[in-house]
Structures are given as structure tokens and as C-alpha cells.
View 1 (cartoon, rainbow, N blue to C red):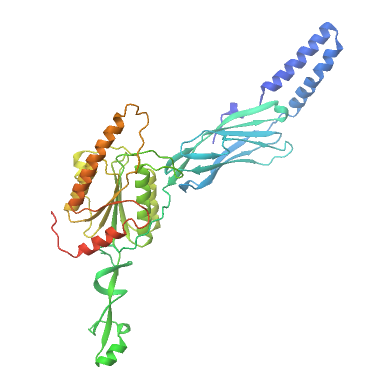
View 2 (tube, rainbow, N blue to C red):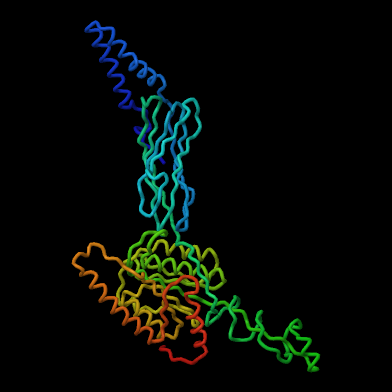
Length: 438
């Protein structure tokens, strides 16, 4: 970064000025009073002042900043490097950086000092450890850097160092789903289709038909029956998954990856875990983030690049956005057979109305409840906030019962296996006829 010229100049430090002032004062007093002992007392100050002046650094420092990694997962660490070139004659280099929320800086005091060989001219590197404890977009720094000469006589700085931006993705929460998706629709994938076709899972043995591959001939049964039989299989299809993230409210206290999680923490981490699970299985995943200050829409796609984009959108989510009734009733462009997974603390009644609207379209919808088990209310001496919260939780229980009675399963987020039983039940109901509003 460009540093103003006045900050790159070497200026005498207060210690040097005091040494020069003490030497001049003692020498003047010794001459005025004819006291040689004052000359002896002034000698150390004269030596230090002369030494500091003769060894004054002359090189112009060149400073730069670099962040080791600009994208991390929660709980991972990187380094912030301050590099100083042109250190001829420099005795010590010191740096201090500002404290940042949700970042743990090492050393804890956020200050470093490195002693330099004044005779050398090697670049000096000061490294701060940075650990991200919560998802989001964080700022590392800014900081200031100061250099001093021998005896602390001359000083250069403080030189401001620019801040760096660090994107922290949600933690890779362990999630596994062994239940198959109820409506596989694509051409390739890991899910068994309901229709026979080219695949790897056995269906039945039937008579040979025109167009069957010769490698599908089942010779043992053909020899027994006297005619050609083939082993048919189910088609291997991929499915489309839509992850809907409710960022309207953030309920509870967040202590980062090492402590308690708020509702938005659980929602973001659950959405990241589900998206990553299905993407790595080869499914097509779409995402909608509503109720946030920066609503995001990602169309269905697959691949690690698409996963990276979705995780970055989750990390940049800002809770507490506003939306009107038209946005609540907006119809998503969702293909038939899409598995819709909604992550929400189910505090806002608008979220429940959105879930009912999706279910009326005949979509397979699963609602994941991300409400924390306990919510603390600080500074509630009179108890009114606690009472109001209890009333809202009773209303929420009634609303969830209404959603469940409408045929929408609601399941608590428990990590691995959270959706297994629900998706098995949905898969059994998928073959049954049902009514849908068009």
C-alpha cells in the first residue's frame, strides 16, 4: 500500500530528545558553575545521543500486507503477514492490529516486536495467527507498524496497514442421509428410479425383446426355459433438491464454533451440510435465501464450483431483511418432483404460510426446525420478555401443529440421520395419488 512520505521519514524519538537535552543542560550547568562532576554525569547522555545520531537509519522502508488464505471454514486458521523491506540500520520492528469480532488473534495482545540485525538488509516478516470462529465476511485489521533505530533514538511510523477481508464458510457439519430421494428425475445419478431402464440395480428377469443389449442376457434362466431371457434393471437417476433458508430472525446467542449456536447459526450450518451432502452425491441442488438483507437465488446445478458459490452466499447472509406479502406468495420456478427442504426456526408466521403455499402445489416438502433448545433473555429483571417469549412459543407450537396436519413433516435438526425417517415416509407416500392446487 502507498504510505505518506511524512510517515516514512525517520524522526527523533522522545528518548533521543531527552538524552540530547540532558547532555546540553548538564554541560551548560557544569560550565556555569565550574563543576567537573556534572561533566561526568553528562558523559552517558552524550555517548548515547552521539551513538543514536551516528547510527540513524537512512533507508526508506517498504511495507506490504498479505493474508495467507482469504477463505476458511469455521474453526480453521490462517496467518496475516506484514513484511518490511529496506531495514538497513533498523533495530526493531513492531506491529499492532485491531481486534475483530469472531476472530481469534495470536498473540492474544495482538502486538508483535521483532529485533533486526542493523547491519543486515533482509526483509522482516511479522505474522499474526488468525482463527475464524463464526461464519461470515470478516475484516482482519487494520494495523499499524513502527520501526526504531538503535537505542530507540529515531523512529519511523506509525505506518497504517490496510485491512484484509476474510470469508468464513460454514463449518463442514457431519451429515449423512441413507434414505433415497422420493422423485429422481434426471438422466444419471445414484438414485434408483421407479421405472426400469439402464442402471445397476436388479429389477427382474423377463423375455428378450428387440433392442435389449446382448450383455444383459441371463444365460442360466435361458438354458432352463429354452428361450432367451434378460436381466432388467432400474434406471439410475439423479434428483433435484431445493434448499430454502429462512434468515428472517436470529434467535438465541451465538458464541461461535466453540460455544452455543443461535438459530441462524444452526440454519446456515444445516443448509451447508445438506447442500454439500447432495452435491457430492451428484444431485442437482438449488438454493433460495429469503428474509435476509441480501436475498439470494441459486438455480439448480451440480459440481464443486456450484457448491462453493452456495457456501459463499450462506456466509454472506445478513439476517433481518424485510419483504412484503407479494414476496411471501411468490411462486418459485420449481420442477415437478423436486425435493424441497426448508431450514427455519419457525418463529415468523410468514415462513409457515410460505411452507403451506409450497405444499399446496403438490411438492415434496420437509421443514427442518432449527430453533435452539434454550433461549436466554438478558436484562429481563421484570420478566416481561420471558413471559412474552413463552406466549410466542405456545403460538408457535399451535402453528407447527397446523402445518403438520396439512401433511408437511417437521423434524428437528440433529445432524447425521436427521432426514432419514422422514424421507423414507415421504418415499412410501410418493406412489399414492394426491390432490394438488394448480
